[in-house]
Length: 309
Image (cartoon, rainbow, N blue to C red; front, side, top):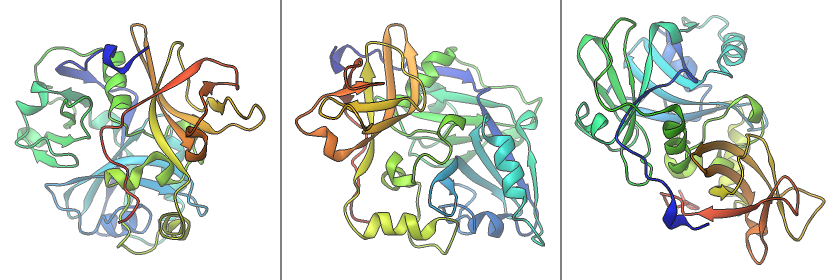
């Protein structure tokens, strides 16, 4: 089991029914979300997209988003569809007198994933976290690459013809998500991680210069008052993994040293993103489920981990 025999992510496009779109409309839409998310939504330009987290008061992630602001009074947030109803309900509780309407716009904005030439045929840039406006209200949001392959999201009003290109399977897209090293927060892992446990500060998912948001004190303290003790890594196993599965060190059969955040299986290749205690990485082996479970192999991340920001 070596990194050199990993399958490669091909070019193509794939429908993404596992993702949904939350829409915020109104004069206060950007300001409202600015006060809720780890990102600066007020200064978000129409040509930008951003990775963001929404946390509880303890800094634990309730959801993660790819955010864009097509206009001053509209913000779109793409998230895992299995958390969207709960996020919409809870986020709506904080609207109060703000001039903003929140809605599930998933059916009004079909989503496709793009890789390689399917993306470059539409977008003028492949730099992560950019927004490229297309005709008929369509847009492309660029994501972090996987295995050097450019990746992005295409979304448009319902009825707009999707782009053409080779078809990716759902398994291939999921594999690319894992190999990008950027995990979405899904229902099994709600409130399991602070953003740094998933390396969000290293992939521009946290803005430490903006004002307060739920959990901001915990997130800032984790970053600036001591060394980060838990990080996310890409891992590979000889058996399928599942989200929220525990990871153990061979030196400690009692306490897990990590948790699986996201998984994918492509043919006989089983990969995942796992949050791990850094102390468990030296002089020990990692195992799935228990200390004598299937061995986990760590794979290289496609980005450097940032300690100082």
